[in-house]
Image (cartoon, rainbow, N blue to C red; front, top):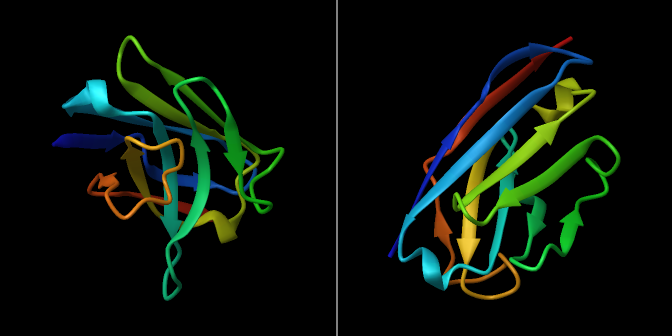
Length: 120
């Protein structure tokens, strides 16, 4: 079992920045990919960014060039640096981890979510 705890959400004005963190505990030796999904109000959850243990990154088109995902394997922590935030980035952001090289995994572990609100 892997436990994931997110932090760093909040309210920010458009154009501002936030950094999300997600610390993993438990069976951390099993983790390969880590990442972030988000769920905007009234919409489905969508994969935003992910990174494998080896450093291969994925970004959705909507955040490419603005968000940066990174991880510290020694601290079992993944980060999401969000720059030039837009109101449409408003969502609950969920941390996810998987023993596979992709977080699109039915056996993935999920955090509880952290709210990010971007005001115009």
